[in-house]
Length: 147
Image (tube, rainbow, N blue to C red):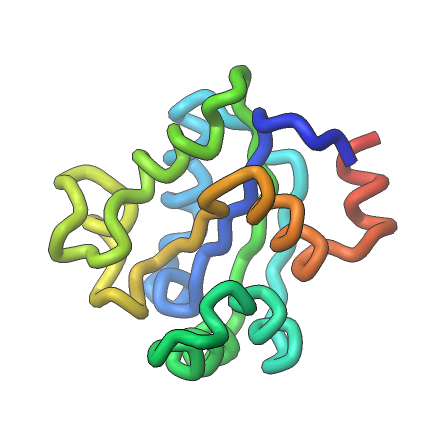
């Protein structure tokens, strides 16, 4: 896989899937000029969720994160921008972790409920993207998606 910072991972979380917001969220990224390079719906196992959120394993909210992300189906997408600030741009579009503090018009403001049920996840760095994408997409999918 290309290690270039023009790509990032987003997850549409179970709360947003239940709200039928998948299309609206993906369209928002497309409207902002991003291309969807890989896309799939899945339900994370507890094991994969723990690996995905391993950076938070020592924090008091870790088990709540794992329980929530495994509570229903999610939609995962690798999206690509046309510059090396993709991660920062995506995080600006999704808004603050707490939807009550997110700016009006951001995805979390529009679709999030609380700090856990906040509609979407987006990788916060290139290192996070490279680690997280391998939990969600298998090697053969990554190779096909970026060939």
